[in-house]
Image 1 (tube, rainbow, N blue to C red):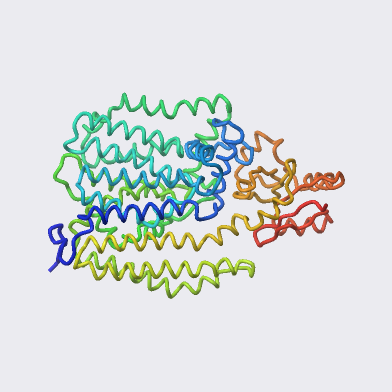
Image 2 (tube, rainbow, N blue to C red):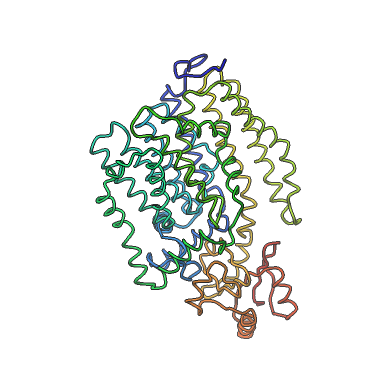
Length: 564
Protein backbone atom coordinates (compact mmCIF):
# COMPACT_ATOMS: atom_id res chain seq x y z
CA UNK A 1 0.00 0.00 0.00
CA UNK A 2 1.28 3.47 -0.88
CA UNK A 3 2.17 5.28 2.33
CA UNK A 4 2.00 9.06 2.43
CA UNK A 5 3.82 11.40 4.78
CA UNK A 6 1.29 13.98 5.92
CA UNK A 7 2.19 16.90 8.18
CA UNK A 8 0.49 15.11 11.08
CA UNK A 9 3.05 12.29 10.89
CA UNK A 10 6.07 14.58 11.09
CA UNK A 11 7.14 13.61 14.60
CA UNK A 12 7.57 9.87 14.15
CA UNK A 13 10.95 10.05 15.92
CA UNK A 14 12.04 13.65 16.42
CA UNK A 15 10.52 17.08 16.27
CA UNK A 16 10.28 18.62 12.84
CA UNK A 17 12.97 21.25 12.20
CA UNK A 18 10.20 23.32 10.60
CA UNK A 19 8.67 23.71 14.07
CA UNK A 20 11.92 24.89 15.67
CA UNK A 21 12.66 28.61 15.15
CA UNK A 22 16.16 28.04 16.57
CA UNK A 23 16.89 25.38 13.94
CA UNK A 24 15.50 27.48 11.11
CA UNK A 25 17.50 30.52 12.19
CA UNK A 26 20.67 28.44 12.47
CA UNK A 27 20.16 27.00 8.99
CA UNK A 28 19.41 30.40 7.49
CA UNK A 29 22.41 32.10 9.13
CA UNK A 30 24.73 29.28 8.09
CA UNK A 31 23.33 29.41 4.56
CA UNK A 32 23.91 33.16 4.32
CA UNK A 33 27.44 32.98 5.73
CA UNK A 34 28.42 30.46 3.05
CA UNK A 35 26.50 32.37 0.36
CA UNK A 36 28.22 35.69 1.01
CA UNK A 37 31.65 34.19 1.66
CA UNK A 38 31.58 32.42 -1.69
CA UNK A 39 30.95 35.68 -3.56
CA UNK A 40 34.60 36.61 -3.08
CA UNK A 41 36.21 33.20 -2.72
CA UNK A 42 37.02 32.74 -6.40
CA UNK A 43 38.62 34.60 -9.29
CA UNK A 44 36.32 36.09 -11.92
CA UNK A 45 36.16 33.56 -14.73
CA UNK A 46 35.93 34.54 -18.41
CA UNK A 47 33.92 35.24 -20.34
CA UNK A 48 30.86 36.66 -18.60
CA UNK A 49 32.35 37.43 -15.20
CA UNK A 50 35.32 39.31 -16.59
CA UNK A 51 33.25 41.11 -19.20
CA UNK A 52 30.59 42.51 -16.88
CA UNK A 53 33.07 43.42 -14.17
CA UNK A 54 35.16 45.32 -16.71
CA UNK A 55 32.15 47.11 -18.21
CA UNK A 56 31.12 48.32 -14.77
CA UNK A 57 34.71 49.37 -13.99
CA UNK A 58 34.81 51.42 -17.19
CA UNK A 59 31.44 52.94 -16.32
CA UNK A 60 32.90 54.21 -13.04
CA UNK A 61 36.16 55.29 -14.66
CA UNK A 62 34.49 57.28 -17.47
CA UNK A 63 31.54 58.58 -15.47
CA UNK A 64 29.29 57.67 -18.42
CA UNK A 65 26.37 55.60 -17.12
CA UNK A 66 24.38 55.86 -20.36
CA UNK A 67 26.62 54.54 -23.14
CA UNK A 68 28.05 51.18 -22.11
CA UNK A 69 31.55 50.24 -23.18
CA UNK A 70 33.70 47.14 -23.20
CA UNK A 71 37.42 47.67 -23.63
CA UNK A 72 36.68 51.35 -24.27
CA UNK A 73 34.47 50.46 -27.24
CA UNK A 74 30.71 51.01 -27.46
CA UNK A 75 28.91 47.84 -26.46
CA UNK A 76 25.16 47.71 -27.06
CA UNK A 77 24.28 44.05 -26.60
CA UNK A 78 22.42 44.36 -23.29
CA UNK A 79 20.66 46.95 -21.12
CA UNK A 80 22.57 48.46 -18.20
CA UNK A 81 20.92 47.32 -14.96
CA UNK A 82 23.61 44.77 -14.03
CA UNK A 83 26.41 47.17 -14.93
CA UNK A 84 24.72 49.97 -12.99
CA UNK A 85 24.50 47.79 -9.89
CA UNK A 86 28.10 46.60 -10.25
CA UNK A 87 29.31 50.14 -10.86
CA UNK A 88 27.43 51.30 -7.77
CA UNK A 89 29.03 48.51 -5.76
CA UNK A 90 32.49 49.44 -7.06
CA UNK A 91 31.85 53.08 -6.19
CA UNK A 92 30.88 52.16 -2.63
CA UNK A 93 33.25 49.29 -1.85
CA UNK A 94 36.05 49.43 -4.42
CA UNK A 95 37.06 46.91 -7.09
CA UNK A 96 37.16 43.23 -6.26
CA UNK A 97 35.72 39.79 -6.82
CA UNK A 98 32.97 39.88 -4.22
CA UNK A 99 32.00 43.38 -5.26
CA UNK A 100 31.60 42.18 -8.86
CA UNK A 101 29.29 39.37 -7.69
CA UNK A 102 27.34 41.23 -5.01
CA UNK A 103 24.39 42.15 -7.25
CA UNK A 104 24.18 38.61 -8.59
CA UNK A 105 24.32 37.19 -5.09
CA UNK A 106 21.61 39.54 -3.85
CA UNK A 107 19.44 38.63 -6.83
CA UNK A 108 19.73 34.96 -5.94
CA UNK A 109 18.53 35.78 -2.42
CA UNK A 110 15.73 37.99 -3.77
CA UNK A 111 14.48 35.07 -5.85
CA UNK A 112 14.49 32.77 -2.81
CA UNK A 113 12.81 35.33 -0.54
CA UNK A 114 10.00 36.38 -2.90
CA UNK A 115 9.27 32.78 -3.94
CA UNK A 116 9.06 31.70 -0.31
CA UNK A 117 6.87 34.69 0.62
CA UNK A 118 4.52 33.98 -2.27
CA UNK A 119 4.27 30.32 -1.30
CA UNK A 120 3.45 31.43 2.25
CA UNK A 121 0.64 33.72 1.14
CA UNK A 122 -0.92 31.08 -1.13
CA UNK A 123 -0.12 27.74 0.51
CA UNK A 124 1.02 28.43 4.05
CA UNK A 125 4.08 28.33 6.28
CA UNK A 126 5.33 24.79 5.65
CA UNK A 127 5.34 25.12 1.87
CA UNK A 128 7.02 28.51 2.22
CA UNK A 129 9.86 26.94 4.21
CA UNK A 130 10.17 24.07 1.74
CA UNK A 131 10.25 26.51 -1.19
CA UNK A 132 13.19 28.39 0.32
CA UNK A 133 14.99 25.15 1.16
CA UNK A 134 14.47 23.70 -2.33
CA UNK A 135 15.41 26.79 -4.32
CA UNK A 136 18.35 27.73 -2.11
CA UNK A 137 19.85 24.26 -2.45
CA UNK A 138 19.08 23.66 -6.14
CA UNK A 139 22.46 23.25 -7.77
CA UNK A 140 21.83 25.65 -10.64
CA UNK A 141 20.31 28.44 -8.57
CA UNK A 142 23.00 28.28 -5.88
CA UNK A 143 25.71 28.11 -8.52
CA UNK A 144 24.47 30.96 -10.73
CA UNK A 145 23.96 33.11 -7.66
CA UNK A 146 27.76 33.20 -7.51
CA UNK A 147 28.49 33.96 -11.15
CA UNK A 148 28.67 37.55 -12.41
CA UNK A 149 26.40 37.13 -15.41
CA UNK A 150 23.11 38.66 -16.50
CA UNK A 151 20.94 35.59 -16.12
CA UNK A 152 20.57 35.60 -12.34
CA UNK A 153 19.61 39.26 -12.38
CA UNK A 154 17.10 38.56 -15.15
CA UNK A 155 15.74 35.52 -13.29
CA UNK A 156 15.29 37.39 -10.04
CA UNK A 157 13.44 40.25 -11.73
CA UNK A 158 11.25 37.81 -13.69
CA UNK A 159 10.53 36.04 -10.41
CA UNK A 160 9.33 39.36 -9.00
CA UNK A 161 6.98 39.60 -11.98
CA UNK A 162 5.69 36.04 -11.56
CA UNK A 163 5.25 36.30 -7.82
CA UNK A 164 3.65 39.73 -8.06
CA UNK A 165 1.05 38.24 -10.39
CA UNK A 166 0.46 35.25 -8.12
CA UNK A 167 0.10 37.48 -5.06
CA UNK A 168 -2.31 39.81 -6.82
CA UNK A 169 -4.53 37.16 -8.37
CA UNK A 170 -4.67 34.63 -5.52
CA UNK A 171 -8.03 33.96 -3.94
CA UNK A 172 -8.65 36.16 -0.92
CA UNK A 173 -6.40 39.03 -1.97
CA UNK A 174 -8.01 42.38 -1.10
CA UNK A 175 -8.04 45.39 -3.39
CA UNK A 176 -4.83 46.83 -1.95
CA UNK A 177 -3.02 43.50 -2.26
CA UNK A 178 -4.22 43.10 -5.84
CA UNK A 179 -2.95 46.55 -6.78
CA UNK A 180 0.39 46.22 -5.01
CA UNK A 181 0.92 42.73 -6.38
CA UNK A 182 0.32 43.85 -9.93
CA UNK A 183 2.56 46.89 -9.52
CA UNK A 184 5.27 44.50 -8.29
CA UNK A 185 4.62 42.40 -11.39
CA UNK A 186 4.95 45.38 -13.72
CA UNK A 187 8.06 46.61 -11.91
CA UNK A 188 9.56 43.12 -12.15
CA UNK A 189 8.97 43.03 -15.92
CA UNK A 190 10.50 46.48 -16.28
CA UNK A 191 13.59 45.56 -14.27
CA UNK A 192 13.89 42.28 -16.19
CA UNK A 193 13.78 44.31 -19.40
CA UNK A 194 16.52 46.55 -18.03
CA UNK A 195 18.48 43.41 -17.14
CA UNK A 196 18.48 41.62 -20.48
CA UNK A 197 16.06 43.12 -22.95
CA UNK A 198 12.63 42.48 -24.37
CA UNK A 199 12.30 38.95 -23.00
CA UNK A 200 11.74 40.64 -19.64
CA UNK A 201 8.13 41.30 -20.61
CA UNK A 202 7.64 39.11 -23.69
CA UNK A 203 8.04 35.85 -21.77
CA UNK A 204 5.76 36.78 -18.83
CA UNK A 205 3.23 38.16 -21.31
CA UNK A 206 3.23 34.95 -23.32
CA UNK A 207 2.81 32.90 -20.15
CA UNK A 208 -0.20 35.00 -19.19
CA UNK A 209 -1.80 34.48 -22.60
CA UNK A 210 -1.26 30.71 -22.47
CA UNK A 211 -2.57 30.47 -18.91
CA UNK A 212 -5.78 32.34 -19.71
CA UNK A 213 -6.36 30.20 -22.78
CA UNK A 214 -5.79 27.02 -20.75
CA UNK A 215 -7.99 28.01 -17.78
CA UNK A 216 -10.41 30.25 -19.72
CA UNK A 217 -9.93 32.86 -17.01
CA UNK A 218 -10.14 35.78 -19.42
CA UNK A 219 -11.39 38.03 -16.65
CA UNK A 220 -7.83 38.02 -15.37
CA UNK A 221 -6.98 40.63 -17.99
CA UNK A 222 -9.34 43.05 -16.25
CA UNK A 223 -7.40 42.64 -13.00
CA UNK A 224 -3.94 43.56 -14.29
CA UNK A 225 -4.07 47.27 -13.33
CA UNK A 226 -2.77 47.88 -16.82
CA UNK A 227 -2.96 51.67 -16.75
CA UNK A 228 -0.87 52.12 -13.61
CA UNK A 229 1.29 49.19 -14.62
CA UNK A 230 2.22 50.55 -18.03
CA UNK A 231 3.03 53.95 -16.51
CA UNK A 232 5.34 52.26 -14.00
CA UNK A 233 6.88 50.03 -16.67
CA UNK A 234 7.77 52.92 -18.96
CA UNK A 235 8.86 55.14 -16.06
CA UNK A 236 11.51 52.52 -15.29
CA UNK A 237 12.55 51.57 -18.82
CA UNK A 238 11.98 54.56 -21.11
CA UNK A 239 14.49 57.12 -19.71
CA UNK A 240 17.60 55.05 -20.44
CA UNK A 241 16.40 53.88 -23.86
CA UNK A 242 15.70 57.48 -24.86
CA UNK A 243 19.00 58.79 -23.52
CA UNK A 244 21.12 56.05 -25.10
CA UNK A 245 19.33 56.54 -28.43
CA UNK A 246 20.00 60.29 -28.30
CA UNK A 247 23.67 59.70 -27.55
CA UNK A 248 24.01 56.82 -30.01
CA UNK A 249 21.60 56.87 -32.98
CA UNK A 250 22.89 53.47 -34.07
CA UNK A 251 21.77 51.80 -30.84
CA UNK A 252 18.08 50.97 -31.57
CA UNK A 253 18.70 48.94 -34.73
CA UNK A 254 21.52 46.92 -33.22
CA UNK A 255 19.74 46.32 -29.92
CA UNK A 256 16.24 45.53 -31.11
CA UNK A 257 16.92 43.83 -34.46
CA UNK A 258 20.34 42.23 -34.14
CA UNK A 259 20.28 41.35 -30.45
CA UNK A 260 16.68 40.14 -30.28
CA UNK A 261 15.17 39.09 -33.58
CA UNK A 262 18.33 37.76 -35.22
CA UNK A 263 19.61 36.15 -32.01
CA UNK A 264 16.40 34.16 -31.56
CA UNK A 265 15.75 33.22 -35.20
CA UNK A 266 19.30 32.38 -36.30
CA UNK A 267 22.65 31.05 -35.13
CA UNK A 268 24.35 34.38 -35.83
CA UNK A 269 26.05 34.23 -32.41
CA UNK A 270 27.17 30.62 -32.95
CA UNK A 271 25.39 29.48 -29.79
CA UNK A 272 23.16 26.87 -31.30
CA UNK A 273 22.29 23.48 -29.89
CA UNK A 274 19.98 20.52 -30.34
CA UNK A 275 16.35 20.69 -29.22
CA UNK A 276 17.26 18.68 -26.10
CA UNK A 277 20.15 21.03 -25.21
CA UNK A 278 18.55 22.12 -21.92
CA UNK A 279 17.29 18.70 -20.80
CA UNK A 280 20.52 17.51 -19.12
CA UNK A 281 21.06 21.02 -17.73
CA UNK A 282 17.63 20.90 -16.09
CA UNK A 283 18.28 17.44 -14.66
CA UNK A 284 21.59 18.54 -13.17
CA UNK A 285 20.35 21.97 -12.16
CA UNK A 286 17.41 20.73 -10.10
CA UNK A 287 19.57 18.42 -7.96
CA UNK A 288 19.02 17.30 -5.23
CA UNK A 289 15.32 17.23 -6.14
CA UNK A 290 15.54 15.31 -9.40
CA UNK A 291 13.51 12.37 -8.09
CA UNK A 292 10.59 14.71 -7.36
CA UNK A 293 10.65 16.69 -10.60
CA UNK A 294 8.24 14.80 -12.85
CA UNK A 295 5.58 14.11 -10.24
CA UNK A 296 5.66 17.77 -9.18
CA UNK A 297 5.14 18.88 -12.78
CA UNK A 298 2.27 16.44 -13.27
CA UNK A 299 0.71 17.63 -10.00
CA UNK A 300 0.53 21.09 -11.56
CA UNK A 301 -2.03 19.73 -14.02
CA UNK A 302 -4.57 19.02 -11.28
CA UNK A 303 -7.44 21.38 -10.63
CA UNK A 304 -7.07 23.32 -7.41
CA UNK A 305 -9.97 24.20 -5.13
CA UNK A 306 -9.65 27.87 -5.90
CA UNK A 307 -10.67 30.20 -8.67
CA UNK A 308 -7.12 31.21 -9.52
CA UNK A 309 -5.04 28.17 -10.48
CA UNK A 310 -1.62 29.09 -9.14
CA UNK A 311 -0.04 25.71 -9.91
CA UNK A 312 -1.19 25.88 -13.51
CA UNK A 313 0.33 29.33 -13.79
CA UNK A 314 3.61 27.97 -12.38
CA UNK A 315 3.52 24.98 -14.71
CA UNK A 316 2.82 27.21 -17.72
CA UNK A 317 5.79 29.39 -16.71
CA UNK A 318 8.13 26.40 -16.50
CA UNK A 319 7.03 24.65 -19.69
CA UNK A 320 6.78 27.69 -21.94
CA UNK A 321 10.11 29.27 -20.95
CA UNK A 322 11.85 25.92 -21.30
CA UNK A 323 10.24 25.40 -24.73
CA UNK A 324 10.98 28.98 -25.84
CA UNK A 325 14.70 28.68 -25.28
CA UNK A 326 14.80 25.13 -26.62
CA UNK A 327 13.60 26.30 -30.04
CA UNK A 328 15.77 29.42 -30.02
CA UNK A 329 18.71 29.64 -32.39
CA UNK A 330 20.83 30.95 -29.51
CA UNK A 331 21.41 28.74 -26.48
CA UNK A 332 23.55 29.15 -23.38
CA UNK A 333 23.31 26.96 -20.26
CA UNK A 334 21.95 29.68 -17.97
CA UNK A 335 19.01 30.65 -20.18
CA UNK A 336 16.56 28.36 -18.35
CA UNK A 337 17.44 29.75 -14.92
CA UNK A 338 14.12 31.70 -14.61
CA UNK A 339 12.13 28.45 -14.34
CA UNK A 340 13.72 27.32 -11.08
CA UNK A 341 11.70 29.46 -8.62
CA UNK A 342 8.46 28.16 -10.14
CA UNK A 343 9.81 24.60 -9.97
CA UNK A 344 10.73 25.12 -6.31
CA UNK A 345 7.16 26.09 -5.39
CA UNK A 346 5.71 23.15 -7.33
CA UNK A 347 8.11 20.69 -5.67
CA UNK A 348 7.42 22.21 -2.25
CA UNK A 349 3.70 21.70 -2.77
CA UNK A 350 4.25 18.11 -3.81
CA UNK A 351 6.39 17.41 -0.74
CA UNK A 352 3.37 17.83 1.54
CA UNK A 353 1.66 14.71 0.23
CA UNK A 354 4.60 12.75 -1.09
CA UNK A 355 4.93 9.03 -0.47
CA UNK A 356 7.73 7.55 1.60
CA UNK A 357 8.77 5.58 -1.46
CA UNK A 358 9.13 8.73 -3.58
CA UNK A 359 11.19 10.43 -0.90
CA UNK A 360 13.43 7.39 -0.65
CA UNK A 361 13.86 7.18 -4.41
CA UNK A 362 14.95 10.81 -4.48
CA UNK A 363 17.42 10.19 -1.65
CA UNK A 364 18.67 7.04 -3.37
CA UNK A 365 19.36 8.99 -6.56
CA UNK A 366 21.58 11.39 -4.64
CA UNK A 367 23.26 8.52 -2.80
CA UNK A 368 24.12 6.87 -6.10
CA UNK A 369 25.36 10.15 -7.55
CA UNK A 370 27.59 10.64 -4.51
CA UNK A 371 28.97 7.10 -4.72
CA UNK A 372 29.56 7.36 -8.48
CA UNK A 373 31.28 10.72 -7.99
CA UNK A 374 33.70 9.24 -5.47
CA UNK A 375 34.56 6.55 -8.00
CA UNK A 376 34.98 9.04 -10.86
CA UNK A 377 36.92 11.74 -8.98
CA UNK A 378 40.43 10.28 -9.56
CA UNK A 379 39.80 10.50 -13.30
CA UNK A 380 39.86 14.32 -13.06
CA UNK A 381 43.66 14.23 -13.12
CA UNK A 382 43.57 12.70 -16.59
CA UNK A 383 41.57 15.55 -18.07
CA UNK A 384 44.58 17.84 -18.51
CA UNK A 385 45.48 18.36 -22.17
CA UNK A 386 48.85 19.95 -21.35
CA UNK A 387 51.45 19.26 -18.67
CA UNK A 388 51.06 22.88 -17.58
CA UNK A 389 47.38 22.26 -16.74
CA UNK A 390 47.93 19.10 -14.66
CA UNK A 391 48.34 20.91 -11.29
CA UNK A 392 45.08 22.80 -11.82
CA UNK A 393 43.15 19.57 -12.35
CA UNK A 394 44.94 17.88 -9.48
CA UNK A 395 43.91 20.74 -7.19
CA UNK A 396 40.26 19.97 -7.99
CA UNK A 397 40.43 16.42 -6.65
CA UNK A 398 40.23 17.07 -2.86
CA UNK A 399 37.28 19.40 -3.39
CA UNK A 400 35.58 16.90 -5.68
CA UNK A 401 36.00 14.22 -3.00
CA UNK A 402 34.49 16.58 -0.44
CA UNK A 403 31.52 17.29 -2.70
CA UNK A 404 31.00 13.61 -3.47
CA UNK A 405 31.28 12.68 0.21
CA UNK A 406 28.77 15.33 1.25
CA UNK A 407 26.34 14.18 -1.42
CA UNK A 408 26.73 10.53 -0.40
CA UNK A 409 26.27 11.35 3.30
CA UNK A 410 23.27 13.57 2.62
CA UNK A 411 21.66 10.94 0.43
CA UNK A 412 22.16 8.19 2.99
CA UNK A 413 20.88 10.34 5.87
CA UNK A 414 17.84 11.37 3.83
CA UNK A 415 17.24 7.74 2.89
CA UNK A 416 17.26 6.67 6.53
CA UNK A 417 15.11 9.55 7.74
CA UNK A 418 12.55 9.38 4.93
CA UNK A 419 10.31 7.25 7.16
CA UNK A 420 11.27 8.66 10.54
CA UNK A 421 11.00 12.38 9.85
CA UNK A 422 10.35 13.79 6.39
CA UNK A 423 11.47 17.31 7.18
CA UNK A 424 14.87 16.25 8.52
CA UNK A 425 15.27 14.08 5.45
CA UNK A 426 14.58 17.04 3.17
CA UNK A 427 16.66 19.52 5.15
CA UNK A 428 19.70 17.26 5.45
CA UNK A 429 19.72 16.65 1.71
CA UNK A 430 19.41 20.37 1.01
CA UNK A 431 22.26 21.33 3.36
CA UNK A 432 24.73 18.70 2.18
CA UNK A 433 24.14 19.21 -1.54
CA UNK A 434 24.28 23.01 -1.16
CA UNK A 435 27.68 22.65 0.53
CA UNK A 436 28.76 20.10 -2.10
CA UNK A 437 28.00 22.55 -4.89
CA UNK A 438 30.02 25.28 -3.23
CA UNK A 439 32.90 22.84 -2.70
CA UNK A 440 32.93 22.14 -6.43
CA UNK A 441 33.14 25.88 -7.06
CA UNK A 442 36.11 26.16 -4.73
CA UNK A 443 37.83 23.28 -6.47
CA UNK A 444 37.36 24.96 -9.83
CA UNK A 445 39.15 28.12 -8.74
CA UNK A 446 42.64 26.97 -9.71
CA UNK A 447 41.36 26.35 -13.22
CA UNK A 448 39.48 29.64 -13.11
CA UNK A 449 42.67 31.54 -12.27
CA UNK A 450 44.42 29.86 -15.19
CA UNK A 451 41.55 30.60 -17.55
CA UNK A 452 41.50 34.24 -16.42
CA UNK A 453 45.29 34.56 -16.72
CA UNK A 454 45.77 36.00 -13.23
CA UNK A 455 48.86 33.87 -12.59
CA UNK A 456 50.63 36.36 -14.89
CA UNK A 457 49.37 39.52 -13.18
CA UNK A 458 52.58 40.27 -11.26
CA UNK A 459 54.75 39.93 -14.37
CA UNK A 460 52.44 42.15 -16.42
CA UNK A 461 52.13 44.83 -13.74
CA UNK A 462 55.91 45.00 -13.46
CA UNK A 463 55.99 46.18 -17.08
CA UNK A 464 53.26 48.78 -16.86
CA UNK A 465 53.63 52.51 -16.52
CA UNK A 466 50.84 55.04 -16.80
CA UNK A 467 51.20 55.31 -20.58
CA UNK A 468 52.12 51.69 -21.42
CA UNK A 469 49.75 50.32 -24.08
CA UNK A 470 48.50 46.73 -23.97
CA UNK A 471 47.68 45.02 -27.27
CA UNK A 472 45.35 42.05 -27.67
CA UNK A 473 46.55 40.32 -30.81
CA UNK A 474 44.21 37.68 -32.18
CA UNK A 475 42.51 37.20 -28.82
CA UNK A 476 40.73 39.26 -26.20
CA UNK A 477 41.37 38.59 -22.53
CA UNK A 478 38.03 38.98 -20.75
CA UNK A 479 39.30 39.11 -17.15
CA UNK A 480 42.81 40.58 -17.22
CA UNK A 481 41.67 44.11 -18.18
CA UNK A 482 39.57 44.24 -15.00
CA UNK A 483 42.40 43.08 -12.76
CA UNK A 484 44.91 45.36 -14.51
CA UNK A 485 42.41 48.24 -14.56
CA UNK A 486 43.44 48.87 -18.17
CA UNK A 487 41.73 48.59 -21.52
CA UNK A 488 43.59 46.97 -24.41
CA UNK A 489 44.06 47.78 -28.09
CA UNK A 490 42.47 45.08 -30.21
CA UNK A 491 44.49 43.79 -33.13
CA UNK A 492 43.02 41.79 -36.01
CA UNK A 493 40.42 40.06 -33.86
CA UNK A 494 37.46 42.27 -32.79
CA UNK A 495 35.84 39.43 -30.83
CA UNK A 496 32.35 40.46 -29.64
CA UNK A 497 33.18 44.13 -30.18
CA UNK A 498 32.85 43.88 -33.96
CA UNK A 499 29.88 46.24 -34.07
CA UNK A 500 31.65 48.72 -31.81
CA UNK A 501 34.86 48.86 -33.80
CA UNK A 502 32.76 49.23 -36.92
CA UNK A 503 31.52 52.59 -35.65
CA UNK A 504 34.77 53.43 -33.83
CA UNK A 505 37.48 52.08 -36.18
CA UNK A 506 40.11 54.35 -34.64
CA UNK A 507 40.05 52.25 -31.46
CA UNK A 508 41.57 49.13 -32.94
CA UNK A 509 44.18 47.84 -35.42
CA UNK A 510 42.52 45.69 -38.11
CA UNK A 511 45.69 44.16 -39.56
CA UNK A 512 48.49 42.33 -37.81
CA UNK A 513 51.02 43.91 -40.20
CA UNK A 514 50.10 47.36 -38.88
CA UNK A 515 50.60 46.14 -35.32
CA UNK A 516 54.06 44.80 -36.22
CA UNK A 517 55.03 48.17 -37.72
CA UNK A 518 53.79 50.03 -34.63
CA UNK A 519 55.60 47.63 -32.29
CA UNK A 520 58.89 48.08 -34.17
CA UNK A 521 58.41 51.82 -34.14
CA UNK A 522 57.87 51.83 -30.37
CA UNK A 523 60.93 49.61 -29.90
CA UNK A 524 63.06 51.99 -31.95
CA UNK A 525 61.93 54.90 -29.75
CA UNK A 526 62.70 52.99 -26.55
CA UNK A 527 59.06 52.86 -25.54
CA UNK A 528 57.44 50.00 -23.70
CA UNK A 529 54.38 47.92 -24.56
CA UNK A 530 52.76 44.62 -23.63
CA UNK A 531 50.77 42.27 -25.87
CA UNK A 532 48.59 39.20 -25.36
CA UNK A 533 48.93 36.82 -28.32
CA UNK A 534 47.93 33.29 -29.26
CA UNK A 535 50.67 30.69 -29.54
CA UNK A 536 50.47 30.43 -33.32
CA UNK A 537 50.67 34.21 -33.65
CA UNK A 538 53.72 34.28 -31.39
CA UNK A 539 55.36 31.65 -33.59
CA UNK A 540 54.65 33.80 -36.64
CA UNK A 541 56.06 36.90 -34.94
CA UNK A 542 59.21 34.98 -34.11
CA UNK A 543 59.64 34.17 -37.79
CA UNK A 544 59.38 37.91 -38.50
CA UNK A 545 62.15 38.56 -35.94
CA UNK A 546 59.93 40.91 -34.00
CA UNK A 547 61.86 42.29 -31.00
CA UNK A 548 60.08 40.88 -27.97
CA UNK A 549 60.60 39.04 -24.74
CA UNK A 550 58.18 36.61 -23.13
CA UNK A 551 56.94 37.63 -19.68
CA UNK A 552 54.17 35.03 -19.42
CA UNK A 553 53.38 31.80 -21.22
CA UNK A 554 50.77 29.09 -20.86
CA UNK A 555 48.77 26.94 -23.32
CA UNK A 556 46.09 29.63 -23.66
CA UNK A 557 48.28 32.68 -24.23
CA UNK A 558 51.73 34.15 -24.70
CA UNK A 559 52.40 37.53 -23.10
CA UNK A 560 55.19 39.57 -24.62
CA UNK A 561 56.83 42.92 -23.93
CA UNK A 562 59.19 45.17 -25.87
CA UNK A 563 62.80 44.39 -24.86
CA UNK A 564 64.32 46.99 -22.54
